[in-house]
Length: 327
Image (cartoon, helix red, strand yellow):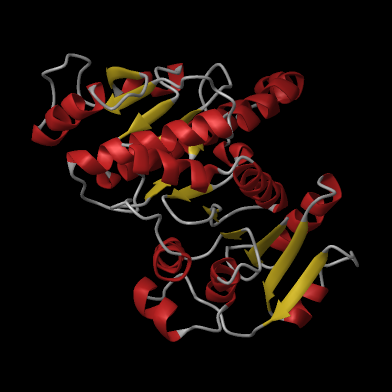
């Protein structure tokens, strides 16, 4: 199996990207990684390994670039070349921690949509209190959505939850402002009716306050709402840890307490870190495309590679295609 990685994408590229790639090939003997980017800069951080290849390019897409224009004009950028390698059949999947919009554009224009998928969805796996996590989609690939799109999100999320996360008959919930069937706006009311007839394990509406309690294995919504929820959860977690740090370093007594609690606090932080589950998959494309967090460290990149490998192994893209054809 071969996975292409945009080595120049992300806040800590290429060092952390390279570190994650090295960790991945050491962990998986069936894996070859191709790093796209500035060869000299990559070499500064790369220990020799016969299953890591480098394709040199000095062109890269920046965080400030307009996504679609950048993909069309910077065809030799590390991100576009990584996506092109998937389209050409050289690699089985690609990963980038770079410009999110540009990666979505590269996924659409270079890798291509599965026939029948109207709108691909960006989907991370987010943590829950019990440690099992849930899949949320869409979180921003499309700001607007029709009820039919949300049903397709449910199909794609169900396939991923079952094939990659190993959940039999995953529970699918529709994000809404109440659990009653008649709650919500016209979009959620229409989507509710379609989801009831979709042939999946639909459990009805779920509220945002219940997400971390594991209310569902897959939660579907439009991209605008999903992105707001994602950013709120992320910001709340960061804010909580900042307040805890301030409280636990305010005086000598609290510092001593912090020293005693350090292992438990570290475990809690890991539990709330959604990069432990991998990146956000761009579902609905002909092959796996993974968006790693912009601030990804080596461990986050490793988890994104592991996720992409599992998606390839479990034939997620082809299973989604078959499900869409069937329905």
